Image (tube, rainbow, N blue to C red; front, side):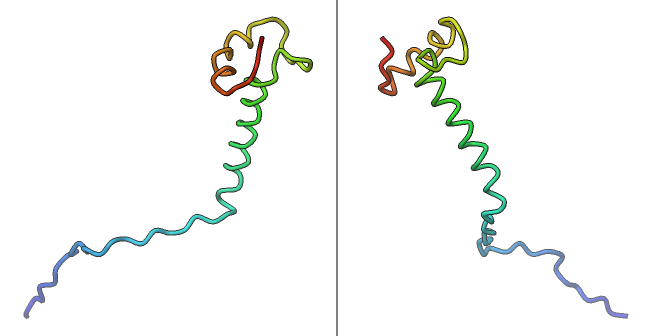
Length: 75
């Protein structure tokens, strides 16, 4: 009986193709990041103004430098 010698697994030198990500898979992450960015924008740009969710100066002091960096006036 002759045994045939076949190579086990020869690594391919061809590049692997990337599978495209569907819009259905990206949509929940995009919505989450969008809401997170809007909340961050609110706290940096509008908190301590006419519509304030947190009383006191705590939020203002935490985001003070960020306001100036992004061009929001705060005083």
